[in-house]
Length: 384
Ligand code: NDP
Ligand code: MG
Image (cartoon, rainbow, N blue to C red; front, side, top):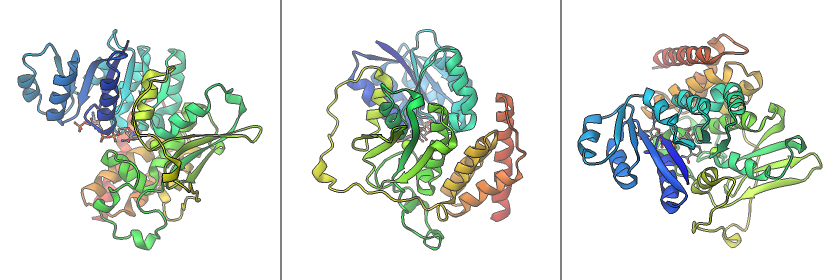
């Protein structure tokens, strides 16, 4: 039996994690859940799974207390309690399914308490991958990837020596605007950007997929997860999202991991590893996909990808600054303050204004994140 905590249980990954836990109640026990503000769903989840704790970071806690009054569930309020549930002694694995920089501190706390991490929150590794992976190694903690590309690489590496890896290819669907020109993208609406062709995900990552920033974040995530040099990571557009990523070895052999786009697969593997559990999720049928195709990403049009790859190469605090500016820009786009193409401009301008710091500690990252958000907000104000 594995005892599990989900940070961000009301989101897309959080809900699918609960589906997986529900399928394997004999293997997984839910200890704690958290939501930011969607208390109605949190209450429903708590009634169904009866965890020992729930955390609300920014919502109507009184309603939760009232609705769960008869249950033996401890109700905690505030962001700091994400770290409380991530470090409970009875917990084996923490699923980091919250979005953005907010994932960093609770993930680090879980690692410091020796909990394995099922990592969906890629921003944690983008911001502070060097520190997070070092602390995981020091505490003998496994970071098990939930992101489908990284789960694919992880599976391709099973039974292989890391030193035998020549390079990896991260696949990308290309998002809803694949093949479009900058001109076409000038007047894109958020409704258009939120329609992903292959995956149904939370709003932030869906916009990141449309700008291709998501693939840049994933390159940085892969760098830290698998101990790669930036030049060992390549991006290839694969519109069908069937090959989830590939590893090329020193002898030229390539392994790929395939399957239908269904996040429950990587989530289940991250929870059950090293075991593989049976399930009845839909199976791949070759005749539905007679062609798997590949293209080069267009970094002239999708500049966020080029910016992110450059930030990866520079390292230091640049990925942290980039991530903060991107979060601000994406939410500004989602609230109709800026246009789609402005996202890349804001991220770039924020990076240009930031001081480069080669080896920041956690407090420095917190400060860089705060400053970058301020800078990005000022740039947005000037634009509007
Ligand atoms: P969602 O927006 O759907 O869900 C986010 C969850 O985190 C919700 O439970 C939300 O609570 C909570 N949350 C959001 N902000 C905060 C905050 N500041 N503090 C505390 N809790 C917060 O996101 P996704 O599930 O799509 O993505 C989660 C992570 O997984 C992201 O890092 C994403 O990049 C990654 N990922 C997602 C994939 C997907 O298929 N969705 C695929 C691969 C990676 P509430 O609902 O109450 O607001
Ligand atoms: Mg992914």
